Amino acid sequence: MLGRSERESGAHARLAAQIAKWHGADGLPAGTGADDLLDLGSTTSTLATVASIDDLAAVMHIGHPAQPSHDLERALLAASPSLVVTSAVAVPAQWVWVGRPGQATGSVVVDEAGMRDCRHVLRTLGANPRLVPSRTALDERIALSGRDGTLVVERSEIPAGWAEIPGSEQLSAGAPIWYGLVEARRPAPVVEGQAQVWFAFGPRDDHRGSLQQTLSVIAESGIDMQHLRSHRSLAGPHIFFSSFSCPDASVLSSLVTELAARDVAHRVLAVLPGRDFLPGPDALVPQWAPEHVGS
Image 1: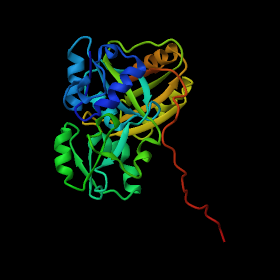
Image 2: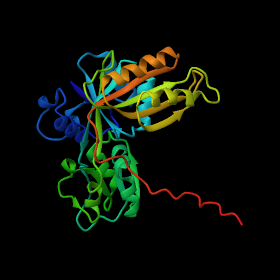
Image 3: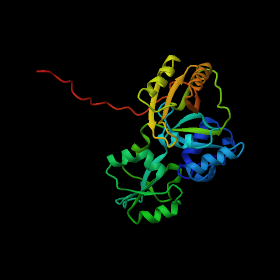
Image 4: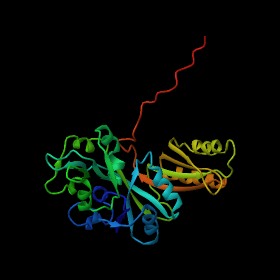
């Protein structure tokens, strides 16, 4: 069985399951409606349900394999240790901007998933977003939009008599949206060959140089870290979230053994088979401080 959180786009999650051929996807009914996957509630409830029910997995937005969504990283680490992301797939964006012909001049009603994926384009287009929960029914969104309002919805959800408005094509012209399959697996899956690994760790002592010591162990294992983010912990030391490409299972096993020997708390959050997950994460052109020129 496959499910999703109530905040996720049902159409995109279903398409991800079909493209990746995740178990249970073949049994989904025709169409791309939001009800094709089980609605498992909030992110916390979704993870708890997957951890407690055999043969249930969740299709979740992951950010990017090499640069995970921080919300998902935190949610996974706060949930059952059995949970791990086991596969990832890129899905073409299905978002469209629609309105009633000749009357589309008002604000745009958009849900949480649509805002997450389209907010930069909508701002560029000068739209005035009105955010609604993703569980809001289509007829409620139409009512909220008023006579001249517009909607951002999945292509399969365009209301009868509505049409795309200028700028709509930009919502699907950018990078695809990455989804992952979250399962209860204990121990974490072992993948033969290269895989992208999400790895959380917490040095035993939170003191000057403690992170450097742990990073040295990771570097000595031959791993080239691509992502590192810190977060406060109520348990004492800071938590660190990382993502890196691992050449094979033995390298990850050796790293885990070495960190355990040093009493470094750790957990594998994802093992995603493959390499070069293209397109890569969003990139920027940094504007560094100018070099100091002495007199």
